[in-house]
Length: 225
Image 1: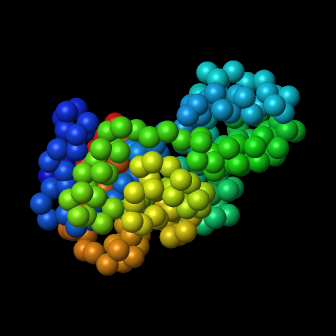
Image 2: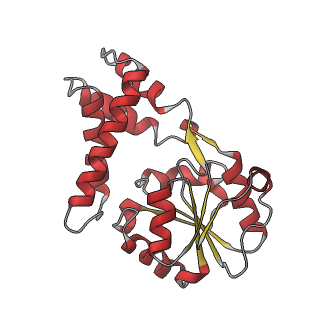
């Protein structure tokens, strides 16, 4: 069994991480190392108000989840599944915004507002447990990488946000052409790092996109959150 689930105390201290045999500690980003702050629903609601569209945060939350899942299904059904690009990622987020705001006439302006907001370092705050694990991996001499379904905005955010700035390498799905859970995503990261699958561990919060997908690619995994 490849999956590890540390105790709360281990998450806080990074104790026992990384395990023996791991040369590369690869971290998911959103939900693992950083989170949006203020929360997504509040940011969306505020952006709507700035453009004359009123949607309560609770409604935003519900619509966002539905829209996100719809886009995941579309990517899963694509040929090839989970292939992506900068244009696809931008299209994905535009579709999410349209659905949240019911394709309001103001949706294009709201989308631009939100795209720029989440591309700023001050839109994100660190998650202590993930940050502790990243520090532990770096102190143990591992190569530390970020591997995320975030788009190209991550390349600008990472150097300016703790703990992302501690990473040696940054891999965004839009840049490598695949989204998790595609096995091609993991193979591409392996090739770029010059490591074998058994030498790599993915740390992430999502049981499917991170943990199960990493194991299917022959990596070890550790779930946080």
